Image (tube, rainbow, N blue to C red; front, side, top):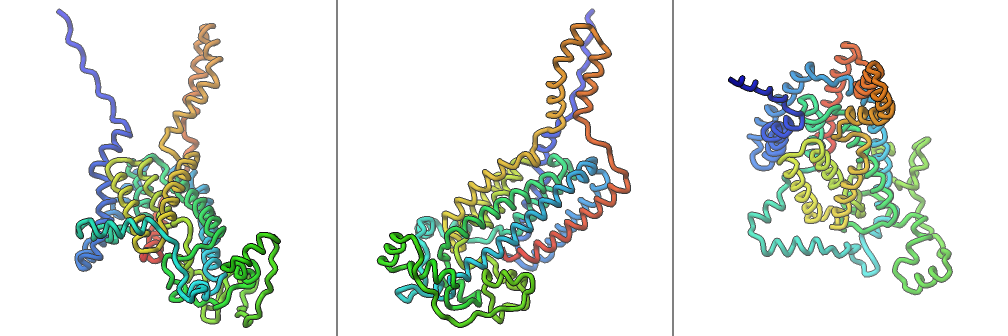
Length: 447
């Protein structure tokens, strides 16, 4: 009589399968709840005032409860120096961008923003994307048009969605370390901001909102001496344009305008010609830059859409699931709102989408979903495979064991840190993130 076959033990669930199951009811629902509850501020402020503190308290409590049981704090500590370096790089990029935004808004003077040769507002560029949206407003049901106009999600929402994604490493929803994907996110954003700054500095484009400069800025009426010499004389006169093309040399003289205000900025005085401050702009160059906001010339490409695309790319690669599809739809919604509300031209949003996608794909060397431990083991195995063949041919079991042990050790993490170091680092990161969240709400809550 044959013996019954022993039941085969079921293999433990794979991490990827665990993440797919969590995508149904875990992190995805938390992200959707955050955006939905915050949107209630426009629909029911009283309900929003009750639900938002409860939601944030729940998320904070879950994070604090899970943090002591997280198994990859060693990897987080090793990722911290790169994270700090990426943060410094991003802050430098944002500072450079802020200076450049003020420059392109002020260098041509308020007169350029306000009037042209026909004494009218400087005309915005023709934008077929704006035409399309206006045509759709005539043909689509008003309920759909109202949904397209709604402020469902703004800049600070995308930043908070990424913070939630990074912290989900505590719950093994994404591959740790969380600081690894945060480093990639900030580094990619910094590169994108530098490329954006170079792009809008190269050619100054008129704003899609012609009244912007006069209502927002206090800048001199006349153009800067640089613009007087190299642009203004050849801006509209066809004969002057032909002449400068033929000679390939500037020939106009700088006009004699009133001497501009020059504050005492010490070592930062070199910024005076770039920022063109006035007496009412505050005591320092820093106060002036805080007022730069989005500028009053078109900034190719959209920084808001870039942040949205990078957030969507991070969610798609690290987590996937239905929530990533929803975030991509929100990205498209944000892009059409930027065009609809005349914050950007259509080309700015289109360029931001493909630049964001390409930049994220190019920075996979910083963090990716691929199993780096397995890759190191395979690389080591390829390195010692010839020795393994020789040892097998010689029936040298000890040599085979030694080589296989080297392969296994190649995939192991480095030496762990002490518990005191881990607890101190974990507390510091949680406090730092809470401060960052508060700054995000304070500085980016208006979109």
